[in-house]
Image (cartoon, rainbow, N blue to C red; front, side):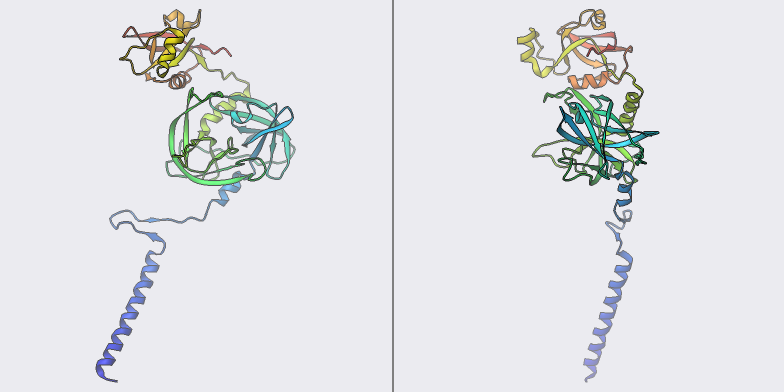
Length: 364
């Protein structure tokens, strides 16, 4: 072999060896690390799943079957959050059980129990059920939504669609947002009449998941799944009630405390109903007024009447909080208690006026 060919052969062997060593070094050094930019922080991602966390809450999650006149009417989800001797307490959504004449719950082992409805709250959408059992049934661990950060891992457990086919389905996502103010209807109307402060997640929630737990990566409950936005232009926007709010009202219901919300003593309408206000109540909205809630009637002998509020007044503030819809006004009002004195700012004949009203009990 010529010397020139020998030199070429050796050069090729050396090049291949250097290349192999380089690839080995790259794999060992960078195989588990994604470097976006050397000037940025290096992030190592290790994900072995959340099976251990799911196991912590799985057997605490129940299927809620709703019966109306002894016929299965619908179903949802719930979770056991407290135990007192042989009595277990289940939390679910008010809208899951509101039409029920009786409610049963099903455990992961297939056992079924008749429940007693302790109470419910339509504005927070929370209901508490109880049942008795001499079994040692797992009670869920309560976490904190307040300590969570946007981007943290969350998951749900529940029975989407119905109570048989996909029971105890687990879906995973992240905490997409906190303190989301979502307009909702507390009745069968399609018009939003209240605002809920909610946790937002992209974890999949379907019909039947309502009332089930939203958990953190440690398997602790941080919220109660209760709704999702449905639209052809929306995907992956679901919401849950923060567990701190839910637990506060659940404890009140268990103690038999009154959870009735306060009232101003007026009937109201949104400014968007201006034409209806004119034809039904003969109330004319000035052209330069763009925000506020219209008083259409003042209850006789109410504190609102004593304070001088009149039909046709346009409420613009509750305390220091600006309001533009009835839903916002109710939300701000319900942050206070019966008996509290509250300043109400309103417009009358183009002039701003502030009155003090003592909040009274809602008549139901």
